[in-house]
Image (cartoon, rainbow, N blue to C red):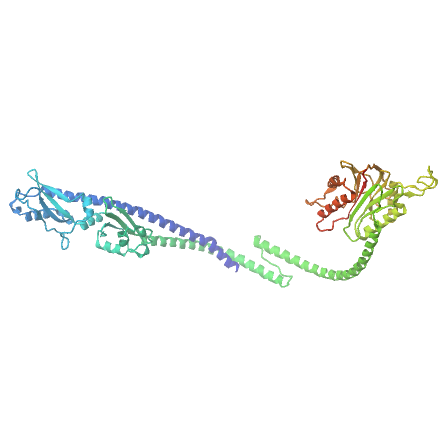
Length: 631
């Protein structure tokens, strides 16, 4: 969809539709208010019908009382009763329309007064109206028969009774009802007769139908007034008369009024849409300029997409579209630069492809060499663990690459129980680490793992024993580390280095010297308190003139020692942070009093928990030395 069409659609959605909704809501609410007002007004009219009927009743009674006072008994020409009744008809005036017949009923036996015989007038109602049975509701309205006493010389000599014509009586009432908007007031008696002021109004009522297409008059006669509520073209209001047996009602057409309201709403909608359209015409030049600039920008984008690097948008202006054009131009320039860079990268890629193939050949060669180095590295580790009469020893090592940087070793076990243990960690992994392990292994082997060194002229109290004249003396562990780091530095191995800890046991004493290794942890029997033994010294190969120190620890039966590389403390816990030396010391406090093999198994399970992938990020090595407890 084009932008112009989108703007028109947005205009319809955001302007015309809300306006139509407001106009529609206004019409519906106005129609409801109008209907409610008409219904309230119609109910008031039904009340006026009841009041008008009572007023007309009082007028008829007034007519009858006046007739009872003007009978000319002494006039000879009215000696005949029929002439007397005719006289009454002539003097009734407007009241004659309500009376169907008059009857003079004597109050004393016949013959006692002139004209006292019972006579009924012929009535003035016209054909078919004489002698009709009065309606029950007429008797209820008048409180019984319509009669008045006739006096002569102060005595009641007769009663003048009248038969009321209900049609004329109700027609007179309904004619007096004020009406507006084509309203038709009516009355309905218990026998289903409908009374209106004019015959045309009765014909109109017969044309009105309620819900279910039931005629209005039939619905009212059957007592179904509820079917006539809420009609779209009419308002019907009914009210039962207090006198009973009558229902007053009014029917008012509201269709024309509602139609006029609809027309007014439509006119308002048209005026609103017209005003909005004029506003749209005023905005059209701005939208045309906007769409022209966007079309120009679109064409330039198509050119750029087809590979035309010279495509540029010339939009001008500092509005959003102008800034969009500037951004496009920057993108086009950057794309041209990127194309040049891609060409350079393609040339570089081809060169790298050649290098890659050469590198693959080199990797194949190095892989073979690494496998050989791995086999050689494994050969550097001891084939087994010495069986010491005084010590329990257990070891765990897990590497992170083909040729590991961690290393452990044991000296030859002397008959006097002298044993030296070495644990080391070369920097890095692979062949570089394997080279450093090989160098340190050679140095330890040449020094017999720190047992002896040749010193001429050394005196000894016992010939043939260590320290005797001409016998080799025990090598100072700190001196060995100094000699080793100087030797490694002289080999020009670059930045290669190795941390190393040496532990030499004899007769319950453990001598320690460390070159950059983690602290040694000692678990004391029987409570399991943990001591941390720290010795100063940098890794081998870092400084040519580095100095180291010796520490001696007394091991009682049941005491245990943990030698380890930094791989375990640097493993990550559940929080993603290294577990640290404190966590290792706490775990050692829990398991340090177990047999050495069990303690190593506990640490091995811990390593597996901390390395769910199966391979740790760094080499992990630890050696547990426990002096056998007394039995």
